Length: 394
Image (tube, helix red, strand yellow):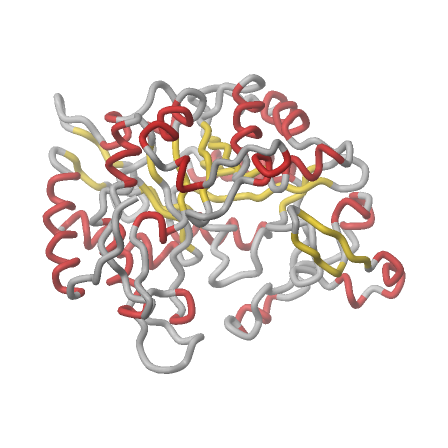
């Protein structure tokens, strides 16, 4: 990892962004805000300079991934959030998967559904409230693995962070918790309706935890992908996990492109903790660790701070070498998660004192695009797409 140094001015990032944008886009034309990037003869697109095989090469330059759907505007992981992300022009829509008691895969960021559903308003489920330790962290609430699918379907989704996004509470109670199979059917329908492939970016959540409960995620996920013909290397589905062993397992079950997610440099993937593997994320992002990941995966999903660290004041420091090192290993890089609100932005891009107000998200996008990343996760795909257009046209 590179040494953290004080960041230059926002103008210097913008200048680097415009130059990098021209170099990256060499010989390509952008077809509309959410359109594909078409390369000219003899000129490689970014996806073509990485890894082997995989339909992810069809994705446009600087892929915009709608994080949990358009979760900046609708309660996350609902068909409403996913659909709005598509309407905005997002290139890919993300799903996180957790199981029910009876083995169905449903779309929730966590198995703890206390903050994302109205379960607390259901007296019939009051007795299900409990405390669990998930990946070493204690949580008290309601958990998907304690409910059958039929029971979960009686609940309705709510906004996860109403203090930051009070406008989203307008949609509380409007949508159910979708199953992944429903999302697959929805993606087929939307593909036909819109005349273009609907790409999904699917994460296995806490796979080691669930496997120990007899609710392994990978096998039922692979079964569903095969059922809907989305298990091939050119299928419009990317799979991801914070646990490398989950991707290694899926590599044996399906041919989809795979992405290893990475948290903070000093953290350890939970499957490493369970296996007494001492390696940290800092070890995984070294060239040797990246080559190991590239032996079974096609991409990397680092937290934004692994791409550009923040200094003690919360401002962006000097970018690390991670993007270049990952590209050298043949991996695409899709960091997470850029959001519009001040509370989530680096200090250099905050505006005013209200943590829920929008800051200079366009400047932040420009700074990360300038590092050479291949795509980015965002709760605000409309902002991301406009920032992408500015960068590529610059």
